[in-house]
Image 1 (tube, rainbow, N blue to C red):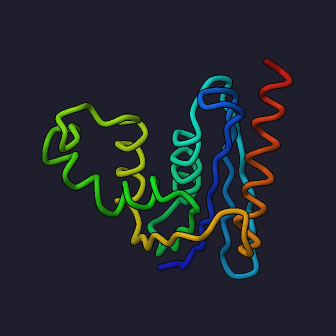
Image 2: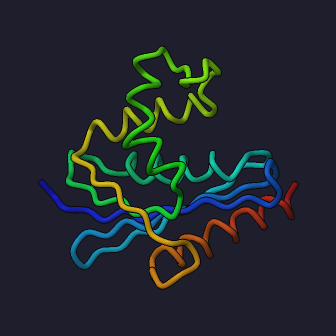
Length: 147
């Protein structure tokens, strides 16, 4: 099984507002950068989209070490999602899970792989996370300019 590093980040100008997502995929000496944007979204949706798009880009089952600076993303996929699914996508307080569409897709994508989720402090010393922040922020700004 190939060992892949996936680093993700999302950005939003306003919340909601124009948003961008980005990820860096690393396999051996190979690096692939991906990014995109949406005209009206939230930062959390962009964090989720970065992970989804990165995992979706892998054509076969892999061991994927995923690094994010979003505790929402990491805790959601490693802890909270189990209860949400048991309760029919309802939170403990009986309110519907926000961003259910993306959580369902992320769960499906993650299930294709052996994943290990790691959190890193944002805007700190993680070079690839800083690169993702730069790409996601640029995508959000370009979306804002074109909207």
